Image (cartoon, rainbow over all chains, first blue to last red; front, side, top):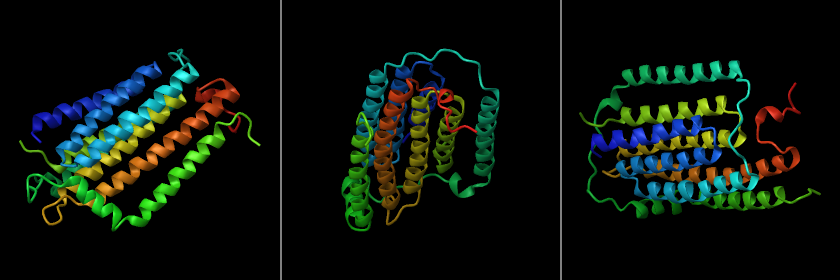
Length: 167
Length: 106
């Protein structure tokens, strides 16, 4: 991936992630989150992870965001009214976030292995979906089945939770 | 000027910090939920970057990509259950503001 494209997509992801936090209107936040996920999917394409990029667009930018928008509109939540700001939460959250970024910066300065360029792939066009599928259905077959059971349990849980009265 | 692993790790860390700040600063439970998704995605980005960096026989390390696949699946299930809980909560309390939901607060 050329550096210009990397900076473009990284900026897209980060700016719209900030917009998610800064927007008062939940619908605008959700739409900003879609753009942020699309930028992230482009970064995955730049890392030769085509399958993950497609899954990212289908699952996150598609299914999850539709679910979010659906719930926001179902509950009819408008823009948040301004309230007295909770100062300890603002100061604490800001301090931890800034401290985390500063610490990451200093750690990455010392991390010499990460300063080399990405090694080139053996062949230019990777058979990505096939390789992921091979790993998924051979090495990680049991976790894959467990994930299936997890989704079934989640589905049943959602149905039970959204019944009008719990018995 | 070439791209290195550190570039991707720093972007991933920034995304995580933004998500964390959102969880701490925002009071709307749905926005808090979106910021949790941002943090999960930051972890995914660093996993994929490491997978591309540590080649196995000239191919990306697919174990990391399978882990990302599992994270995305679990996150989708988590969103479904979490939003169902938010709907049930809204039915009981008519609010999505976390400061109005304080029955368990000491």
